[in-house]
Length: 395
Image (tube, rainbow, N blue to C red; front, side):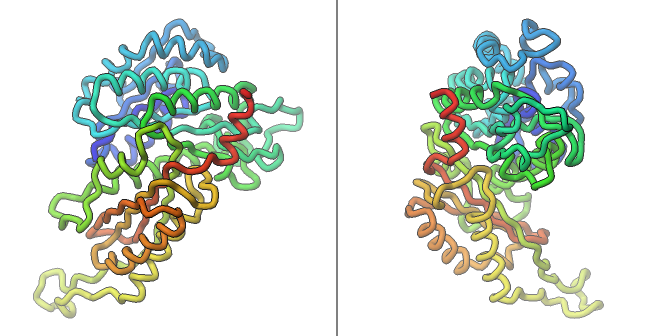
């Protein structure tokens, strides 16, 4: 599917920039933009050219919005049409979906996201999704005098904004006292304007000795991997045999839903040996010219493993009891490893796990690949504990 990605604010801009760096030539990435009130943050991006970065809101001033979500909302309402026009050179009318990436606990990106989502929905007949980083508890706590705080030391159990500075476990966790309140309000607003919201629970991905700031680059990498795995799964290289079950934008839309529900992305890979196609010249000069077949039991085991890990492993957000109203399963890898019976068995297992037969599936052959992978979307899930905790901050 053709996806147009818009990074809003510091966290969103960094992820959009990393997507452009890693997947700029991939056919699924139809366009990428980064919008922010902070010119310095935009200037720090590496992969996006100046024509794809845009500063909005002169009223924000040099110090940013200081966590003022209401000011961010006002800027978003005032500049949504302007931001929509700033995307025109990338032909957004050709996109099959839009993805807004944002730190939910911030002010600039979080404030502008609902208005931009509404503007894109008004202009184009394509679903608008949001991928948002949740703030950790540690961000809202007053910094002490003992140096950087790790997520484990602060008791953080939620996700972060993707903000922070520096590398390594000692980089400090940013202090943003309004982050949880901002996130609660932004989640509600995005649920009203977007087809689905994919929250990312950063703190659930933090290692015991890491701070949010120190883990920022690694967690952004995980986010990019999940986004690319999902939205790029339906694209096959030119000349590749057409998948038996083609995944397209409508499948993602049906699985994610259209009522602003929370959805989770699971992803897992397993390295495999690509089948030997025989002699490079087809003359038997270096051994048999017959391709080496994949052992059936090995293929079945690999597929079962990645489906279960993508389902029960760490998802972008917790899926309580594994249950979901709708599920999408995509299995990919070298065609010889895509055992149809194993995929069918995995689909039946996933239906039992999710407690619903509303399962869509597709396959993604990668002829020159060296791994088997699975992507699982579950939407219409029960409210995760961390989101419930965040919502309680405004009750």
